[in-house]
Length: 409
Image (cartoon, rainbow, N blue to C red; front, side, top):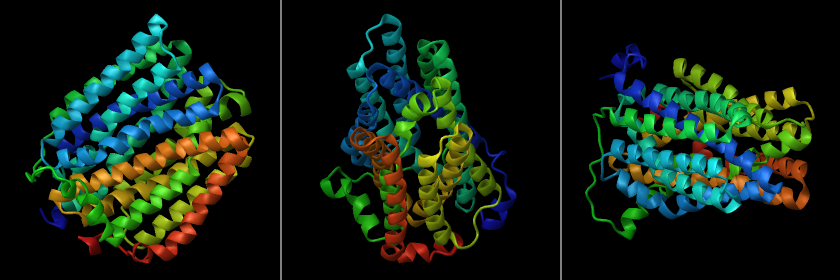
């Protein structure tokens, strides 16, 4: 299929992508609901922001341990089956939370143990999920499919936290039981997806194979730039772990307030994803990415000073727009720059760095909040993100100069 044929074809009429999209919505809604419920429950149990950071750290540990093996597996075996199994494991973890709450034995340590299991499943799922998309849609449609796939995530990021917060106020057991159901549904749907391009690598497992993604990334300044820029910006600018503190202590709201705050970035991100799915970026791609990361930092700084719940929601929406711009550009460039038989391992590196940025960013925020206080921790993070932009402009000049996706094909 050439570029003209792809431009006339709609994603809506592409059945494999539609199944992929619905599966992604289901699993991400489950993840977002579970994230809100676990965060509120943990802070309700201990009232210590450091424990909120430990939730992020516990999710990062399995990613660091298993993500390179996950990339190798994604390049050797049926990617749909890998994702399906991971989602079933996550569903069992959700069922365990529901049973534990119903029977009264869920403690701080039990929560962290279940979070570890879920993080392990996600280490394999997320690595494999991003490699599946180029095998579902023609490559000329990849930029639009990436944006539309990201919009699936953002639909869930909006609805999941809001629903999770509201349902938790009714019954924590209900939230976790629904999460388990959604994970199982997602597993079934992804198993029905037909992929035309599949993993072909059958090289034996070795250290060189495990670290091939790092080697490829190191020699490609575009891939190295987009991954590293996101890593340091989000580690320094992470704020989501502290939202339970803002909801309870700053805005005097219940779990519904946490749900709305967690949903706000998704509202902005969904808007950006829909726009880019219909009107993909044509020019100044590299400059737009740097501008998006700078906007992300400014929004965090403003959020630190806000004492209005509605203004804080609006600022988190702006943060979501900036984050989505960065995500779509990063994921599209990585897929275009990487051959199919390397996508699993390069995706593993990207997944490791994304997980590190999100979860270590949460740990950084929780740790710093326990030392300095919540507001200074957020303020320092926003300033750190801006410093990353200034430094990255000089270090990753080839990324800044990227003009269009077409030039990278």
